[in-house]
Length: 181
Image (cartoon, rainbow, N blue to C red):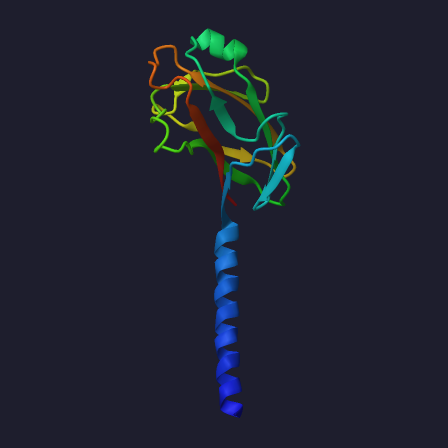
């Protein structure tokens, strides 16, 4: 009986060590994926980064029953997705932010060629307008010092050259933040 208890304890110790190793590895490289929809501020900690989505309707990029728009109309009329990334840790954090489409492809077409978007970081104005096919990156290889933060606004719309295949459909995407500390 004593030997069986010893073997079980060894197995438990090996399992605990394995889980601790997995947690250590995953804390050095965190991957945040969220497609939560809600009406309140949504905050998530990723490693030592705190990400807050602040939008009255959604915490994801969601376009429903869209119609084509010019880039000017999109920049003027499209709804903003607003979020903040803050370094709450004790070392500088390097991160990348990009858009990942989550549209149900069995019910909707591939939107990567016709979804246009623009990003405004820290209220410096909207940058170049791109399609998801060209580049889905919102911010690449940025660094945040301890206590530092960055504010992002993203606008997305259906390109004016989109045909009827894309109209009255639903586009869904989520913001992905990869952190390396």
